[in-house]
Length: 243
Image (cartoon, rainbow, N blue to C red; front, side, top):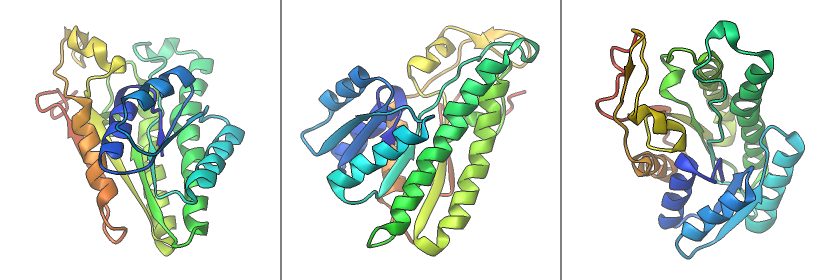
C-alpha cells in the first residue's frame, strides 16, 4: 500500500513496486490523480482507494478494501504529507495551519501505521513491513518550516516505537529520510530557496525514481532484516553543513 500515491514520490514508488511484481494499493485524497498513477503502472494487480489519511474512518475503509481484495497487507509505504505553512516565519504561523500539517504528517501517518499494524498482527502468516517517509527535516530544519520539521522529527519517534512494538509480531518498521527529490513540492528549490544565512539559492535535486529504488530494496528484505533508517538525497544539496 502506498499513501500519497497520486503524485511525486508516492507515484514513483507505486510504479517501482508494480514493476518489481508487487500488487499495489494506491491511496490519496484526489481520485483523478490516483487514476493517473494507475494509468502509468505496468500491467499488474492494483487497487485505487481515494482516502483522506486524517480521517480514522476513511483509513479503516482503505485497509478493509485492501484486505477484501488481497487478503493481507505485506507493506505500507507511509508517504502522505504536506508542507503547508512552509516559508512562514514562526511568529506568523496561524494555529489552523499548524494543526493541518500535524493532522496530515503525524496523525495521518499514525492512523495508517496503526491500521497496518493491526492487519499485520492478525494475518497468517503474521507480519509485514512499514516504511515511513521521514525527511532530511527529521534531522535538520530549513528556515521557516517549524510545523513540517516538528512532524518529521515526530515521525522518527513513531518509527522507533513501531519497530519496538512490532518485534513480537514480525512487523518491521524503517524510515527513509529524503532530501530534494524532484517533485511538485520541491520545484522552487531549483529556482531559489531561503538558506540558513538568509540568502536565496538554487539547490540540486535528484530523480524521485532513485528514492523509489531504495523503497523497493527495503521492501524486498526478509522480515528478519530491516533498514532502520536510511537517507537518500541529492549528492550536492546543502545538508551536511546546513545551518
